[in-house]
Length: 102
Image (tube, rainbow, N blue to C red; front, top):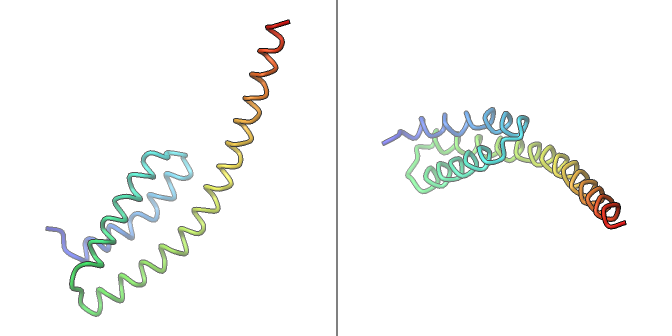
């Protein structure tokens, strides 16, 4: 069984991992890490914690909220770029189809 402090270290280690996955656009890996992070967080919140551990969990959760806001901003910007590319591709396909019909 993993100790509470080890779980907290895992949570803190996910910040850089999440950032790397977003930067490298590894969406499946990002999803897996977010699921693992949520599982650990839920587990920590369901266990009896010392006051130090509780304070640490609260600090980590606050840091998670702040960094998640930044991550969301980056991901939304990338989503807009992908949507524009998809729209352009759809337009190009229609143009090719129209050309082939004539």
